[in-house]
Length: 329
Ligand code: DGY
Picture (cartoon, helix red, strand yellow):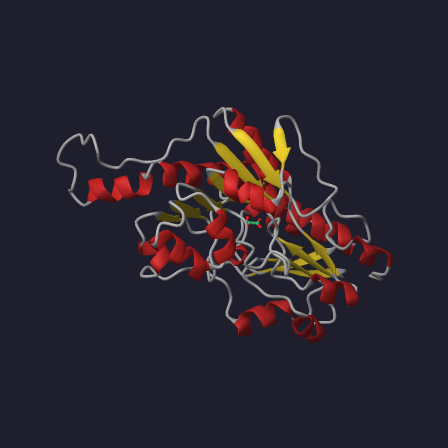
């Protein structure tokens, strides 16, 4: 007889799913589709599950967890877990796990791709060529902002922020950082400054903080007004960190120069959304961790988290370790 029932709520790379199937004490149900399940399908997957390999597009509130009291672990496929009410999960003894580390470089690469694309108007230039507007080499066309030797400000100096900072050294940049946690310490050549100084002195502001009640709309009208008019804002964290209405105004009236966003609110944005149509905004469809190796590793790590909690072992990455003492399986 099977000891544990788990549900995988979306098609993810096979590595982790195969690992789950290989466990004799685990029965796996898969929602093998690229689009998220409907609410009814999602609830059907949660019904009777002891553990869930969960996705960022599902919102696990206390109310949802109350309806599925068997669930002991939510193993989120991602480093972010703002889709889970962790306090509610903890109160119900549900372990919340995530997949940090394995997607650090991939996400930092996308921050740099956005930074370069926005600074050097890459997306706009590609559209220009495709639309047949390229008539000649133009001494005054498509002029962008320089990157080498400029100042980058890192908001949130965790794993990904640190990786972006390390990459900035190759561009001979000055690196400023700001982090909410007083315990976070700067590393070689990175200067910790207060938030307002970071905004005022950076040519590029790159967001890497988690999305919480404290960071909701951290980048608002007031913050944007403190930035340079030549500044570029990059966000690979979560859309909610930026007040998008404020950003639309700032991009439209020249308060800042451009933005590159891998994350938005909502996701997806409609093709006619101002942030999508504005010339000086580059929007990607949340592909920060989307390399083959990172996604394989996320799949494996989420599966290992799930298996460990269900067996009463310590998982590789748990967000609320206090529940481990209380979880009786
Ligand atoms: C995460 O891991 O939180 C990303 O947003 C998706 O990989």
